[in-house]
Length: 277
Image (tube, rainbow, N blue to C red; front, side, top):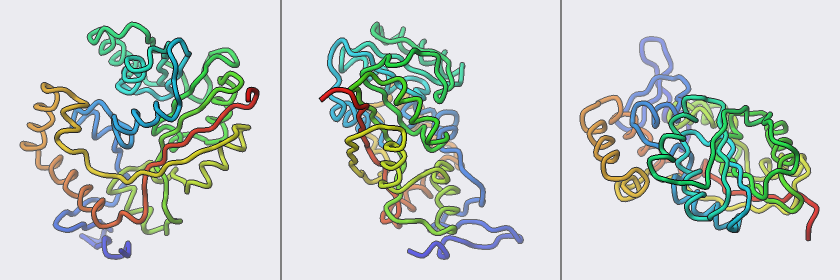
């Protein structure tokens, strides 16, 4: 569908119309919306299913050292710790996110986990500290060369990086990028085609890249229940039912997912630090 179909003029300002929804033409902070307005704790593309698949691809073994770069409130970090029995470290620049992650881990009694407030592109960990490094919905916000260079520095020889990132399925026009960033998420400014993500990882010295592309789909009530639990799911549903702005935003996103699946996906990537066969 042409991006022109979504652009309209309202009071001299460009707006975006999707079905019966009218949105302002400004970049949309999806993570903030999900975290602060909706109250969800899984903030990256694909939610729990994408993390589950990434863990499978990384073949994480008990006793390994795993780093989750850009862990947010730690939902994915806790999933990795529970399901792999590895020693897991979550890192995020936002001290508030780290505080919330620590509190949630204590409540859920996950022991094999710790959190640190650090810049994901310049951590204080020694070289070759980790067997696996996980990066989910972080690379779009950062300089790719710097971030992947830090990952390569931190990986042990033979170690693997797992990346979950927004991935264009075809080169976007300037208009479609504007519409996407206003409707779905501002991270599309930093999204790449799959071959360009692989090229960026390879430039950092990582080898043997793999890629799986997955469609963006709105989370089902069952998925939300699995990810958030009964109490938080009830709170989320109440916000959706009682807040017209939240309802409008979710409706517009769902409408766009249905109308334009040919433009975007999320990609699950792996790449290896050379050194072991």
